[in-house]
Amino acid sequence: MRYGLATLLLLSLSAGVPAGAQGGAQGSCRVAETLPAPLSAVPAPEMNALFDLKGPGWTGADSTYSVPLPDGRTVWLFSDTFLGVVDDRGGRHRFSPLVNNTLVVQDGEVLTTLHGGDPTLPASYFPSPTGGRDDWYWVYDGTVERTPEGDKLRVFLLHFSRAGDGVFGFRWRGNALATLSLPELELESIVPVTSEGGVSWGAAVLETPSHTYVYGTEDHGDDKYMHLARAPKDGLTGPWEFWDGGAWSGDPAASARLLHGVANEYSVTAHAGGFVLVTMDTRTTFSPDLVAYTACAPQGPWENRTLLYRTPESGQRDLITYNAHAHPQLTDERGWVVSYNVNSRTFGDLFLDATVYRPRFVRVPFEEAREAE
Image (cartoon, rainbow, N blue to C red; front, top):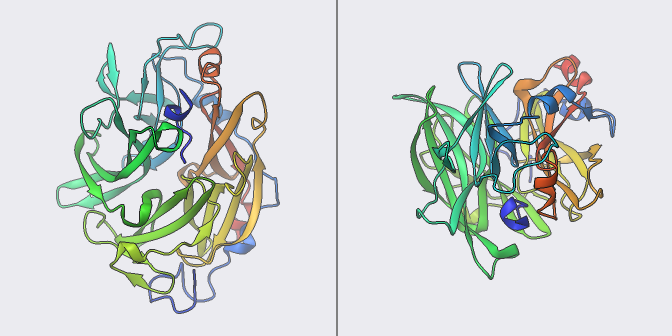
């Protein structure tokens, strides 16, 4: 279950791992030593101020993935997005456009909104798969690949449609992969990606020198499980392999559950010879707990659960928090930047207070990690 605006209108084994699957040389994985003290994350006011936008353009959204581009810019990937302006009282006009996905391009401290349509009649950047109003794409993670035609931005998409029998009145229909030109960020193609086994692929993307790892979520409402696939580096449009719990397989139906309690969206980051998973803890519905796990291989085992932050918005009025992501390109001496989304179960709140439906950012002080590396 993904808590988008359409719902509210309302995340293995390391033994026997094949060569190349480990995070580093034997003995080099010290990522477990790098975890900060519990509850040590603090708000990042400079990042929150960056997204305190009044319009015209983006005034709030969820998902909040980010991909660093080769030219130094960052593209932020958002799902359900409010466009328009914020009034002097801090609210949105009741006719503010709402589209299912947008891009926001960050160049220094300048943010530029990209959407479909035109300024008078905006539309989603990634158009409906059928051209209608009853289905749409929400965004997942992305990455930049080198191709013979030049660098391309690949973005994973989730196809949803309205359905009376689905959770909250909509249903996941499948997965897709979009290709955008660089540096122009013009949409070139959208092609289907396997959805066999009920896994939504692209919840997180991890790049290594040899492979691109694609994490997925198997969503059963309150029960969510992490899955893992991989492709050769710069090869997402070719064949994938799927981790079956003991080896890599070409069969997507063989994909194994790796961890229970991840969110629909999360992040996996290479660090200190291993990997760090950042996610909201979905073992409890609408949990305020933002947690981290560590592993020495992309497939796990995921261990050392650490509570990084407890979102203060949770429990205030009808507010909920969900879908945390790390943004490693923004790391500095203060630590990692991690975002999470804020929403309300009362749709009118999103018009009365524009800050309700915006990402929040915190800094996680992985100081020991930098020293270890």
